Length: 273
Image 1 (cartoon, one colour):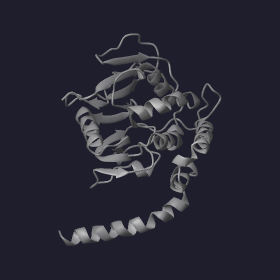
Image 2 (cartoon, helix red, strand yellow):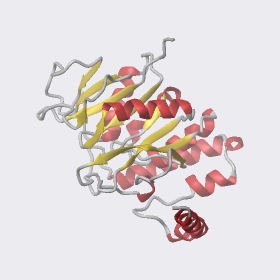
Image 3 (tube, rainbow, N blue to C red):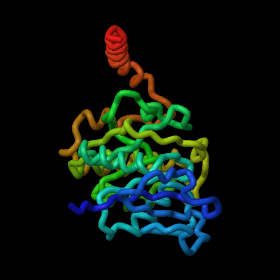
Image 4 (tube, rainbow, N blue to C red):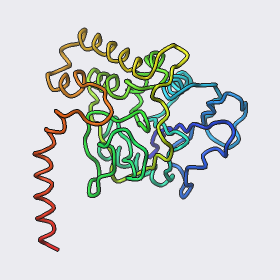
């Protein structure tokens, strides 16, 4: 039976060996999109179904340009990987397979423990196939097509792409009724390079923190005009949450019951060995 393919977009600096961080150990069950963010290479150096060469500043800028390119194309999901994320083709195939089986609308692989990271909740958790989450970060997001097409026009407000992940995507998911979001722990990738977005001033005169506030304000307006779709839980977990590095104390306190349950499970599991 024919199945509509997904797309995996890979960024490239226009100089290095493209896609050298991908282990080609299997035939991809999806289409590649290679994106030259230097804007200097007119023709793709490798055979890929999609190729774009546009000088771009950061992830949101790139995703917005890709949105304009593929919004009229046929695909089921789209994922975005930077050129410092190490993963294999077979892992990406498995990622889409699990997302299909679990009927996920938004998802990402978990991060190897030796990755550079901002948010600890995305680090790999052994023993889980998937783990539900309120949002996935802009580092390596995968979106169902309708969700991506709905957030596409908003990338012009965030060159960094930040704020889109925490606030906009969950808001749009509620409006579309597509809220199945998870980290797929059965698949891991490694983020191999330190984070470089913080404190940069983009061509729009904003920093990433400024852009996060702008996206947050846009979401407040969307929620206000469609309030029937949003309950108190959404406000607490998404809209009212401050965008900070690390985890706020209030959320750490909420973890204590789960920590005790996990400790109990470890003790019980150990007793059967």
